[in-house]
Length: 179
Picture 1 (spheres, rainbow, N blue to C red):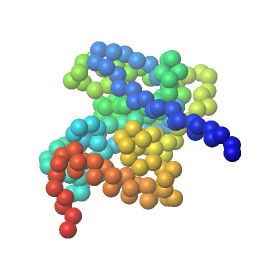
Picture 2 (cartoon, rainbow, N blue to C red):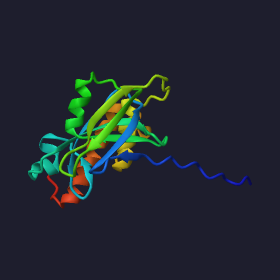
Picture 3 (tube, helix red, strand yellow):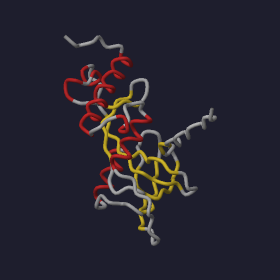
Picture 4 (cartoon, one colour):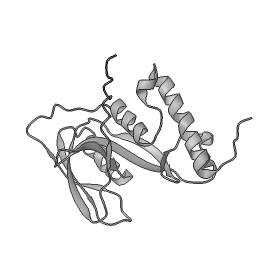
C-alpha cells in the first residue's frame, strides 16, 4: 500500500479593505472591475436582486462593491475592495487599469476607499486575473458555490443565486416563501 500524500491546500484569498485614515498602494493585475450588490446581515452577503432577495424584501438597501485583483507592495496577492465612489473614479480613468499602481486612501470610517493616485508601471506584469477568477475567489470567501463544481457558467450562476438566498434567509430568519 502506498502512503497517501496530503493534497495541497488552496492559498487563502485576502480581501484588501483599507482601514480609515490609511493610504495603501497596489499593483492591479486584472483588466476589469467585478461589481456586486451586497447586503450586510451577519456578514457581507450577495444580493440576488428583485423580489427573490430576502434582504431586499425586508427593506434592506443593497450596497455596491467592486473588486479588482491586486498585489500589495509586499507581494501579497488578493482582491482590492472598492466603494462606489472608487468605482466611478475607476470608470472615469478608462476602466482598464491592468499593470497600474493605484494608491487607495480612506479618510475616515464614514467614507469609502477612493483612488487618490494612479500611474502606469513601466515593467509589464504577466499576471492577469480574469473576471471569472475574481468571482470564483469572491464565492470562496462568501462561502458560495465554486466554478470548479459546475459544467457551465449558467449552472454556476444559478447555484450562486440559490445559495445566496439560503444564506440571507438564515441570517434574517425569514420564513420560507416557497409554495
